Length: 97
Image 1 (tube, helix red, strand yellow):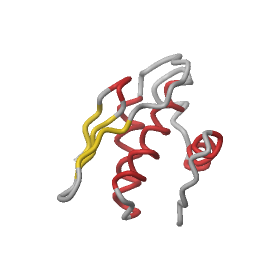
Image 2 (cartoon, rainbow, N blue to C red):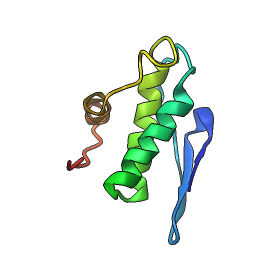
Image 3 (cartoon, rainbow, N blue to C red):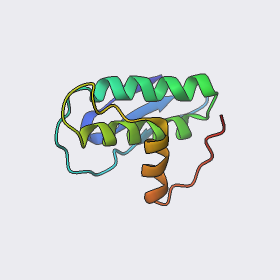
Image 4 (tube, rainbow, N blue to C red):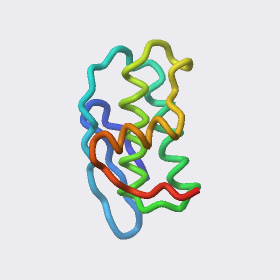
């Protein structure tokens, strides 16, 4: 389960754990499409079989990058951009393909 909490981040849970993961702080230009970025990010995590923490980090990074741009669709971030965003913040997690 994943619940969007806007600027507060997200709440994620599975059968064993529940936790809140804080949003990354960015200079927000536009929130249009951020829900779509959240949905896409969490689906990537589920399809990849990631632990919920990893999926939450990836998802919140996707949302943060989306909020940096203008428009709802034209700026949806690609996986490499999300991985680079996390790396810039010294969040080193493996995203095996």
